[in-house]
Image 1 (cartoon, helix red, strand yellow):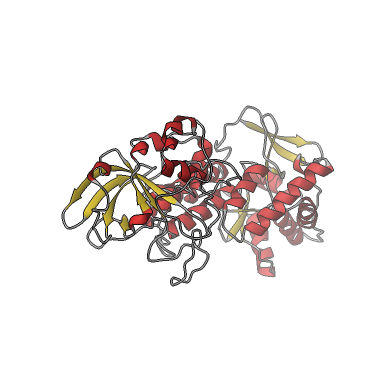
Image 2: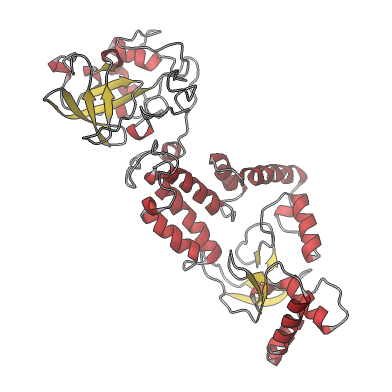
Length: 460
């Protein structure tokens, strides 16, 4: 798989002799010398001297042939300098470093390894810009890197530095921008699995098990490649992906993003799935028809704000007495069951296929809808819908204002979930539906209600 040989300008190094598949464990070995990390004392020097003295002749020759960037006047200082130059951490969070006969021969590069090339690792803990890398490598290891990343033309190097500086800034935060920049810098970047883990923890802390599971699953390949399939990170995150509800952060911030582990939508285009995963809101341009797949305008149940909390994605203020919406939104759900006892209760299915109760607390307890409108397969449109936690029922929607609901017969069945608008042209003959598509959803000048008025005519 590899050989130990001379590498021009670097001394000894490990060079691949065949194509090495992603995630392959290249080597596994025990350290011949161990020392505490980030400590320097006379006691440490004496311990190192004794450990070198206990090596067999072959190990001792290999140790003494390793590079040493530190000046020395005796054997104790020489051995200590070799350890300081070459020791590797024993695990990602270990308190000890070690000298490994082969692993310590792996040279540094700032970019990823390609086939038929020298096997390299990244010596610095955090990916920094070009100048910061140069200074750190010279100060700590006594060389200047000439890998692909460090040898890029000036314009490309500046663009790489811009991303790395932004990644460094975002490392203290959690968000979509960091993962996007990691992917642009290179999908094999060592920081990417940690960024996915951050995203998983944010989702889980807000009760979103579906996104938490997916983010945890996406973190695993990076840990697998960097540390092996039996590493603590792979095992722990595999467990997390199977049952994110066991994480200590589950629901600690809120349950406003509440989902089950299986609530991820199916059948979406990859870009649409990413929009769902990251809760992206697609911009709407003047004169553009409203997109039925725009989750900011037509959210699924799990995306709705809770009626006992103020979601700043939907409202301008956290003041529950003056919660002015930032924009309009409309929940669409297909009627799958209905019954009337004390009041009308529907079971409706949202765009993600999730079934929820819709219970009428209007003055007429649901009698405002004529029987012809209450049919299985018909679609309910609810303006400014909010999620409600019922005391004796599953979470759903508590409907109170008759002006905010419509059951347009032209929008029956699955037509509203089709991609694109050409398939929906016949639906736009209905004035309410036509207005639904032409409403300026992102501009809130006051609540609207049914019946709506189209702002402009639509020609099929």
